Length: 130
Length: 461
Image (cartoon, each protein chain N blue to C red):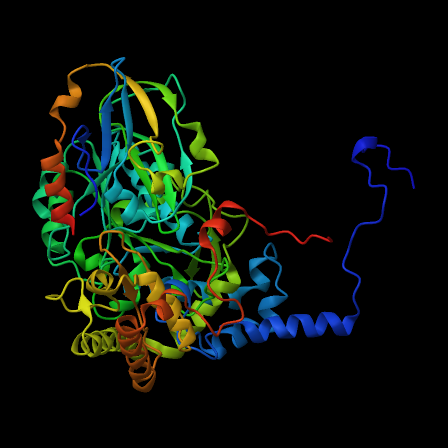
């Protein structure tokens, strides 16, 4: 079983969320997701300042196997993107939960993340797929 | 010579660095390259109609007759009656095969056929002043081109899940349709190699909601001469001629993606279309079909490709077409049964294959660390092309295998033996498989580097 950190929230579509000290939400894809995708070759990130709604496609990760959309787990404004991924998309494979973060957003609704999956629930999602 | 229009900074000071080699060196270079090629004339491709399938030599030979080759696309119909007759007969053959009321041959490839099909769906709803339909439904097992086409045509895409048996989840479909549904795009048999079990029910659900049913003809070769998409309730279809009708595969075609429609969409077909009146053939144009979605190319699509399809259909006749579907499905089911009996897991074990089937190597990965990609690479060492890997995305560590109608039992048995050998190797010596291929002109490539650092231009240094 792949790593599922206790301090994050998750979605059915394999994004993770971290609530940061300033109230922003950091988003990436899970260890399981990067394992399924294989070696990353390209990442397309949203533009800073874009407003996204919950469930909207807002990034693309492309591996040697497939290109996959990343959905905004909560609605909000994109405040920062991980521009280092442009030259080093393999960071997502190496360190999906920290250096491999994709974007940070300012949520419209601070409590929106509470409705997402906790680690135990996400573990069920992963188990049901394998 | 003065080349004054080009700014000085763009003018070359030295001669162009072209390779300086003799004719003989060039001949040897390209001959050696051609000998390094993997080709259908020498080897089996278990990914079939998607990528490479044998085309009878005759189709090419007769389409290359000088009378066809020398005809100018804009020459008068009076001097090209034979050519028009061939295209007209092809239209009629495709109508008969698909159960549709009208066919237009003009789309230049499958993707353009899809574009034409969805554009006609839009034209139909617009003609009824029904403009709130802004969603196209696409099953999650669909070819990626379907959502891409719907998006290109300005529709929102709504994904419909697949149930555990590999069919469209009918309850999810029922919940998804409504006054916003413009249509459903469906491939049948699906990309999972399964004939959709609830097709009648699906057609009814979509039609009752006021949507249209789009048939992606990618897998037509599994049912040609047996079942007609028109009889399943489809309103519009595109056909990838290379998959079923012996036209060029791979490397960009050229392609042909004719579209067929039922009565409702007949006025919107793209032009030109060939019509016959009292033994004379002519083009139907804007004057004849004022509601047409228009032209997709300057003249009649890829006419040479259409001729190959026509010759193939005439060579086979109706009887032969039936045998295409029979052999395509027989070969797939034989190969599936052989592999299953030798220890391979099927992704949908309860279902009979159509013309293709999916093997999952998930267990092998768990036991040995060898993944589908490694097994695919090792097949090259055994003299077989790799099947499609990691598609459809729904199935982990998958092979999509399509032997096609043209392969013999001996070839299928040899392929089975090769896969069984690799299975044994993976358990005995996983590193051997993980580093394959070992015997090809180039060995394991760095796919990540290849994708990130494109190096496609000749460099004199």
